[in-house]
Image 1: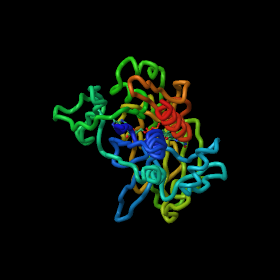
Image 2: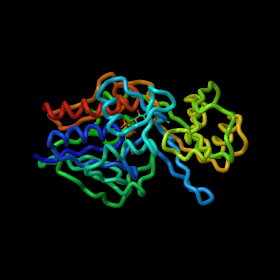
Image 3: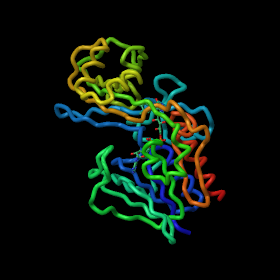
Length: 313
Ligand SMILES: Cc1cc2nc3c(=O)[nH]c(=O)nc-3n(C[C@H](O)[C@H](O)[C@H](O)COP(=O)(O)OP(=O)(O)OC[C@H]3O[C@@H](n4cnc5c(N)ncnc54)[C@H](O)[C@@H]3O)c2cc1C
């Protein structure tokens, strides 16, 4: 039996790859990031000889159903900021590492095109460092991987539509995400603020990241996420401007340093309305948090649903 290609090693892709591997199928995962996890991300920033870590994507995980709850238990996540919400330690990306363990993951590879041949699907992929967002694919020839019996794409919908055949991808058109500007800032001393804050101005959410379990509590590291309105209005603004505006909205002294990250696809606004897409005759599938709800649990469940459809085919 030919292997299956899973494109994207966020929670949806890792979930599908794990379920297929557990059922005895051979899977190859490709991700343009340097590690697995996608939007469950941790950024390490070196400053004055010290390493600061920030969960700059998803902030915490909540399980409403038993499958995801079992995963959070197996990955030894810990409660934060209350008993219902959990975080992996020492950073959010630890969950991606946990799930990727034992899987065949090609990291830093941008999957740019699919070719259907008589032998099966071929995936054209480039060194991710050569690919510029929104620009045409590099002229250097890609590496080809395959043949695969099936290709499962697990990127946010707009990125998925760039690689999937138009007819298969048509149902993904309504899926919409809000962008999110995120500022990671370290302060010289403890701020007189609670560990988590929800705002109505430019800031949507701010959290003392260093208060999470397993983090360096001697540091005062904050993750400040802009709300969707601000993020849309300043989508193309320079990071310096975003940092200045968000820090001005937080009652805090000047930071030791601040770095901004722009998520073009952050929290889901319009969902597909079904757990996944699967076309057995084409051998093509789609899973992501865009299918049902913009939460980590939904991404994981979408991957499980797609794997079940593939195995049932
Ligand atoms: C700022 C922010 C805050 C959030 N807060 C929370 C929260 O507190 N709780 C919660 O439950 N959820 C939260 N979420 C949502 C949660 O992170 C997502 O629902 C979940 O991580 C989505 O997983 P996914 O696998 O569908 O997509 P992703 O995690 O986006 O994974 C897609 C993967 O595909 C890869 N990829 C994309 N294009 C290509 C390509 N061409 N070739 C190869 N690889 C490619 C990407 O590198 C990525 O690793 C937040 C998200 C953001 C951005």
